[in-house]
Length: 92
Image (cartoon, rainbow, N blue to C red; front, side, top):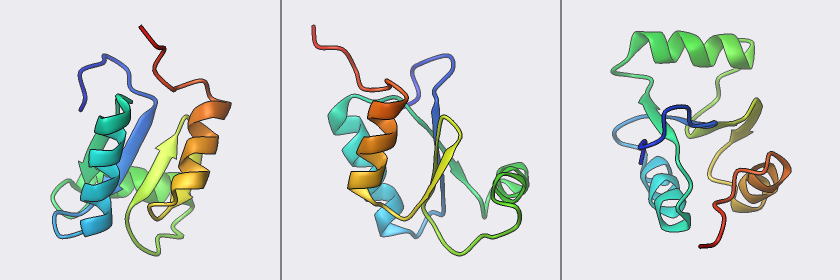
């Protein structure tokens, strides 16, 4: 899902990463917008991740939630960051 002009969540992923796909489906289910970037297919995305992580890449997914980097599909940490940055969708 990337239907917002300026999503505050970026998932750095690879095409073969099952956890990356599961995290994207989970965010879709919650209705939370994000951008997904494949670090193997997109050199700029890889360089962006390296700059954000200080070169300390150790696997995917790495999720940037408004500046907070979260390694792995860690639902509690992701939910906490989403709440902290007030990124949860508002109920209609």
